[in-house]
Image (cartoon, rainbow, N blue to C red):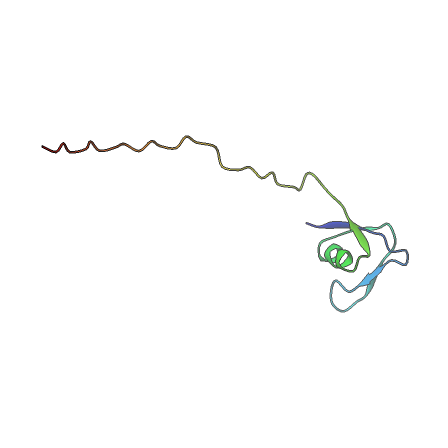
Length: 76
């Protein structure tokens, strides 16, 4: 979930429910779609929460299997 802190001095206005405009004052912390909208309008700065970040690990290193060679046929 996205979190952001409002940095615009006159606050941030939006209608998260679609019918009622809400004003978020300077310094308030918002989350979800309101945070995404505020970040898109450059009215907020993103907040980092390390608990919500997922660690990305690559695949385990494994030794490749060796290919066995077929014996060559002798001419003669």
